[in-house]
Length: 391
Image (cartoon, rainbow, N blue to C red; front, side, top):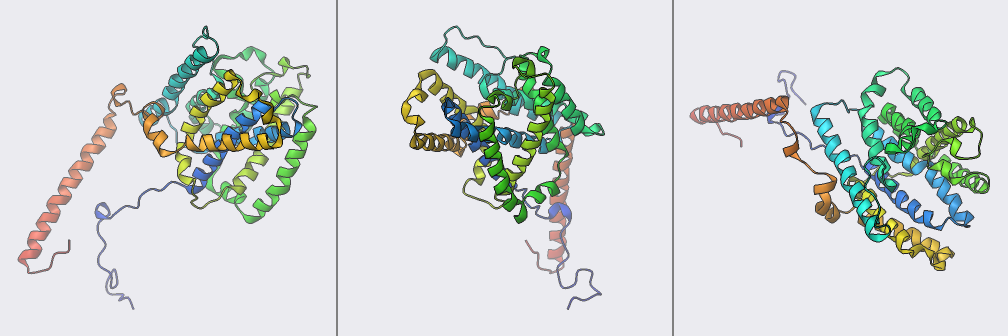
């Protein structure tokens, strides 16, 4: 029984906070699993995109996938951007983790096309190539995070902006602003979500309900193939670029957002929450995302996907497996170690020293020095008293 006369019972008096061992901060396996599975679906989607001509089955699956796979990624990005506050530390991370990779890979993709297909291809930093629109959009979204954290109705405002963008062709292609604005509600949704919202979709009942919902989504996608243009799922143009009436832009924007949220919830419901063999790969998804586009583009330039064998059921399964395997390999640690200098550069030379951070560092070193001195004094005093010193 613990004695009430002793403040800590039979336990030894606890060490001061600065001497206690702090638990290491661990990554959330659920979100790493979600990011890995989402990036695999991105690779599979780009593989399926080469087989759309006249293949209704593949196109139906492709449309169902494109309804939610990028929204899921964007929602996760928004969720982890909640603490972005334009502080020097976070601005530095935004530049090194988003802006610099965008510049490096934009030049890389332009040079790749110049070598493989078009020797006269220009390098344009305002016109994101292929999948680089996401980095451009993420940079803009994060810069606007303090705004969405301040206004009273962030999600309705973002939806209005997206709907207006769908009927505004004058926005143009610079920085792929149509996608930036039409996918904006997904990022804002991530900002307003809380951990308990993810717990709701991870219940067993949610996993069971996700099965018929996904089946209905595929059926609707099958029905839509001859009735709706695939371009709507890319959200990169205004309605005026089609023959549809102007009001269909806002209607489809809201409808696609609703479908994206539902299917993303189904996706999260199926994501395992425990550590899996692929959990560690979730930390390297940006590598897989940026690199696999070179293989897809090279295949397009070289005509790899024109072989009739790809149009057979076995070929369709094969290209699906190849897409998933390729992007998995590109997320591994060896690839991260080799390319970290361009994907996640530190670039300490490019930034001013944060005075506040330097002061905190000095204060921390001083506390450690005082702690060592205090510990030495206590040891000497205990030894003089004949007491045993615990190390």
